[in-house]
Image (cartoon, rainbow, N blue to C red; front, side, top):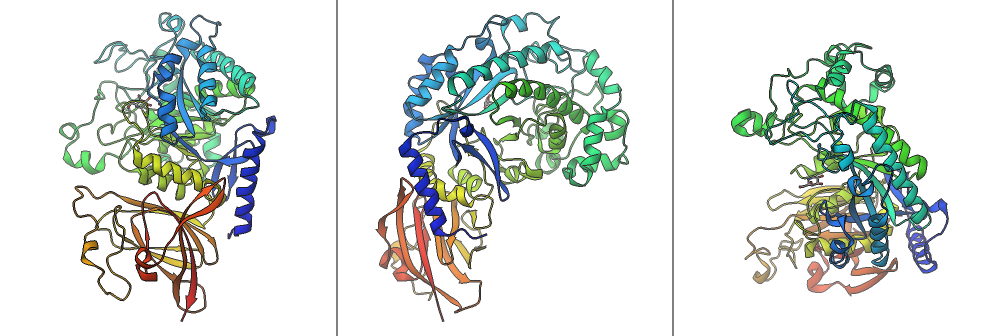
Length: 592
Ligand code: DGJ
């Protein structure tokens, strides 16, 4: 699909008009998700919104005083949204008595700083355990049941397991009632202003230190038949199930009913202890290095995924009945050092159990990855399967990752964890956020279509070819601090002072850029560290020339040229080099 410039100009102008007229004041502007091509976008006040964000450390918003110095730092980092935790313990200090002061203060603080919020409901579970449950819940272990691990233990290596069980309606009733009160209040104070964009429900749920809950109620359910609702869902979606899940179901003969182990194979014997970390000493070097991704004890994880998803569906349903904005659940992913279910929370929305979560929690729109592992692109791709919208609530500040997430994986948003503390926004990320924010009307107009992509490259990578619009682009790594390419097309060497663009740099940085074909001969590029050569891919003269090369910025959605490049800056008209944190507009022409 091709999108012409007039259309994009229209988008930019209507964005500017909306900004001038102030926010739409009707409920029609309530945050919601909408499909565009292969992408899912967050629509706020009737237009798509790119969430350029950061998550605060867990307890940053436990007092308004603690938030005071944080707001200016967030603004300086060019964030447009902040992810902020809301503690159930503080929100409902006494059963049925809600304290709205912190939520109100955080919303007011965000508005004063022209920021949006995504609120994180730290309630029944936070990183698997239940440290944010109110005191009245924690101390009443008879009314609010806890999980048991191993052979009936409630005490782990590190101490008591403060983990509420998914079994027992008292837990989910209490959580759902509090969440409903929160959503009712957010609607009252924000239903027309839309400062709050989305809600994260709980945080990294799943059983730790064992592969499943082994309380008596859990054991009874595990020994019983798989609920018909789940089996019916799997039957109905058999052809499109995530391959990992399909494989374990196929291995046991695609049974249509039975116990969890009859349908999905054996679980972990209670006597096998799950270590806190799966180190190479424990797994053996080979498994630690390569084999760790294989799925251990799938029936335990599927069983827990079903029970967590049913629980969360109840909470989400209660919240959405009050105020229906997009909601998501985040994932503690499997990694080499947390390779077994239980060393990562078992039953969380990991890629292999996405179908179980879809069946169990149909009102939860997004299954979101916390990407603290090195396989960023792989995780993005796995979280886009079966139409799951991508949103990344926790990750690092790597600016190449945000470029890839936005340009290639159509993410709704990107959010490094701990931006107020352990992971301050770097100047590199702040600059990247600035260019993405300027370019966002164009990015959002192209998300989900084949007119936009992103590429990352490292030193030593061979050139990459990308077919985009009417040209095939050959990208050659030049390094992030390059101001000129090494060789013009004819092979004539440029002045030796440009010979090693990375001389003096200890670690050459990864290069990444978003590439957008905005017209038959027009491109916008954001970011870089590449040289780009163009080859026409539609009939006509075989060569491409650089017609116009402009460096610039968008002001109120309008392209403003800051430098028109020729001479030294484009290899005397022959070479285009993309530089980090720079936006270029290029017009090409064809020649024999
Ligand atoms: C992941 C959790 O979701 C966060 O809340 C925080 O605890 C980080 N881990 C700490 O690295």
